[in-house]
Image (cartoon, rainbow, N blue to C red; front, side, top):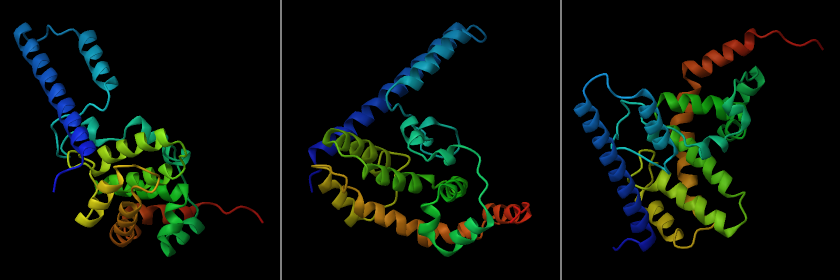
Length: 230
């Protein structure tokens, strides 16, 4: 079956950006070798790094988890979408922690719960599942058609495209639904995919989280905290 025109365009654009950056890095490396060791200007290197950081959605050919490639970390737009407590220190109470153990939905609707669960998923290299779910939740809050379409295409590139290192695991049926929906994106474009990832986290990651050292240490810490006076 022929792929939609919009998907082919997105894939071609991503590949070209990857190829361009690879070529630029190769040229810079060759230039440094010609100049010899110790002759590269620190300010020039920093300027090149800043330029790469500011380039739109630049990526590399590293598809493994053995390095700190920027394509494996959250973009500024993803970070800004996080609740404030997910970007700062957190100290859930024992009552909160007990509530999480009884309900996955309670945990993901709690900012402390999201912070703890995300930290656990990072340790399992599956943070993209939670980030995709949060991106879907944020998509539902948009109302302008232009912003919805723009955000949907970014989400597709980040989490659905097979070229993305943060691709989430979806079955063929759901992937086909998303591809059809992307012809005319709405706030409901990723609903089936969101449900599948939610179920995956609930059935697979959540039980391991409750048995993890992280959850147990948070529970122990909350029990050692002094109780307020009545």
